[in-house]
Amino acid sequence: MNVIYNIAINAFNASLKLYARFLPKNPRRKFPRFVRGRRGLLSRIETEMNAARAASSRPVVWFHSASLGEFQIARPLIKALKQRGDCTVVMTFFSPSGYEGATAHNHEFIDHIFYLPLDTRRYARRFVEALRPSAAVMMVSEYWPNTLQQLKFHSVPTTLVSAVIRENSQFFRWYGKIYRKSLSSFRRIFVLNEQSAFNLQMLGYTDAKVSGDPLFDNAALVARTPWHNEAIERFCAGPQPVFVAGSISDDTDAGIIAEVTRRNQDVKFILVPHDISSRSIKACSRLLPEEPLVLSKCTGQTDMASSRIMIVDCVGILAYLYRKASWAYVGGGFTKLLHSVIEPVVYGVPVAFGPRIERKITPLQLIDRGIGEKIESAADLNIWLSRLKADPELNDKLRAEALRYVDKNIGATQEIVEEIAQSVWPQHQ
Image (cartoon, rainbow, N blue to C red):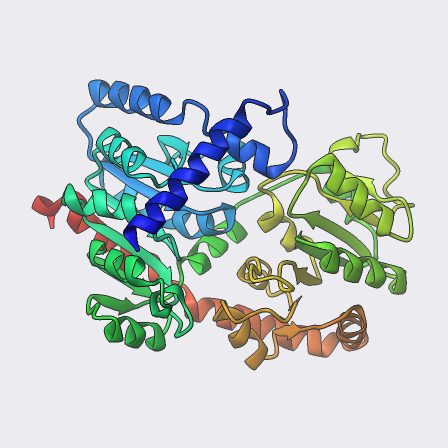
């Protein structure tokens, strides 16, 4: 199976190199940006890390997230680790949404941000040798066999955070041997429920620990962080309540939200597409019952009073926008990739989402508490919204329950950071 995996990853790498020759100068779509971001990547990493080592002997800690959503798990861990001691933090991403979202803002606790090189044997070896990390921390479900093998070969303590191991995951499939083998590269796996720990034990891995989700800590940190956007403030200033639809990910999400905007003329809507390319913004706008405002085009002279819908075409501000919401919808629930439902709930905002929640634990918990609503159609979402609009007392009850739920789940960060710190500064523990 290792042979098949390596043939496949090398073939993919070869096809990317060929495709890269025909890239437009400024690609807007996601896949071309994925390819462009990896041009000269390893040479850039080697140069930057050699310069960093020449300037400082601080230990290097490598954090990796697939995309921007998983980065929200890493952020509180990085901040807490930096507060524990002096170290160099390297953050990598697989997807453009993560890399571009992170580089668009100044993250004071992160020293270097890169794309993750493709997981070929050669690239994995060069990458790990360039970083020379004292510890590595992966988010959620990042299992790159060649990279993990190199970390194990170089005796790098590696931690997996916020993992959920299901009976139908790749570990239990006929092709899962290479992934089962990769588990031995992790010194510790922090899982979100007892079932995951049991499943790992069935696979022969005994160093799992059930912990909370650092996403709660990050969301709580964001909620406490002052944030201001003049155009958003003006748009939300009127008497109408605000509905935020975040991470609209596909045509189903867009169609449902468009229909709900049509049926609820007494509500203002802020729509945040997952893909903010001009093509995506135009496609979303065409579905709406009226011409929306687009945040990047708003000025001090823009008439907000006569506008009821705004599309946000900026990366990295969605978690702050939810504070303006009375109700929220989180996209991706009609695919396998439902986005963060914690981000609105931390403000006490009731949240709706699509039915594909088999990969998530939090949505099920929200449904049990009445805070979350699983919907199958625009009609479902409209019934839910109409019920909450008509019952302020119910809204207050759900808000209080949401805040209690968040408070109960805060605190996982310190436990996980303690484990990482023991690897980075063993002499101080």
